[in-house]
Amino acid sequence: MPSQSAALRQPAAHPADAFAAAWGEATTLDLIAAAADTFAGRIALVSSFGTESAVLLDLVAQVNPALPVVFLDTGKLFGETLRYRDRLVSRLGLTDVRVIRPDPAAVAAADPDGILWTQAPDRCCAVRKVEPLARALAPFDAWISGRKRFQAATRAALPRVEADGARVKINPLADWSRDALDRAFTDRDLPRHPLEEDGFLSIGCMPCTDRVAPGEDVRAGRWRHAADKTECGIHLPFSAAAPRSV
Image (cartoon, rainbow, N blue to C red):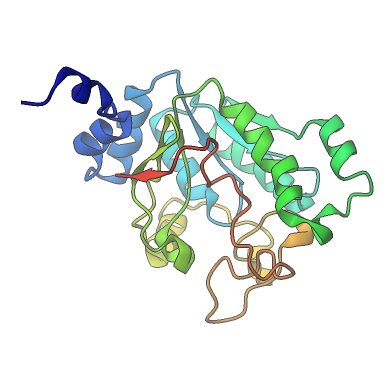
């Protein structure tokens, strides 16, 4: 029988474990509904309003159009993305879209000339995306992401539910294929991002987004100028704790 001190040393179960056990195999819509119910008032969807975002936003709107949606306006987005955001918000009836921006003082100190992305892209993302999102998610215990396994080799093992520091992170579309996504656009008559037909398949900040060539990963056009960079950092752990997948 383990000693009392040994029992005290055992880590407490993460909320992601219980949620994944109960809902990890549910349908996409049921998973979103369960998340909205389980973490009512404590969960948000983080959306870039990019080329694939409309499907997840539509599913969330079907469950609860008042669920908070966090949108990061880095100050370097395409105008087309901002206009597409406004179109989707109106079309889907989303009522709590929260536009988050980087701290002006932090941007002025780190990027006074606006060209930090050419010199230190990780630092640019940290100031313009990672810190603002960490601040925006502070009131929440869980968040919903639109990542999918087909998007890149680095996401091939993406779980539907995972622990993200102390929070629960839910990836409802993790196991969706590109064909399934396209069918959802057609079946729901969802508008496409205006830059998609011009070859932009994954869209972030304007200076760091390029067209994707046939046969490349969907996210191959991101940070072409930075050979080793594949993520902005918002999908890396916010704390020093090691990420855990369920």
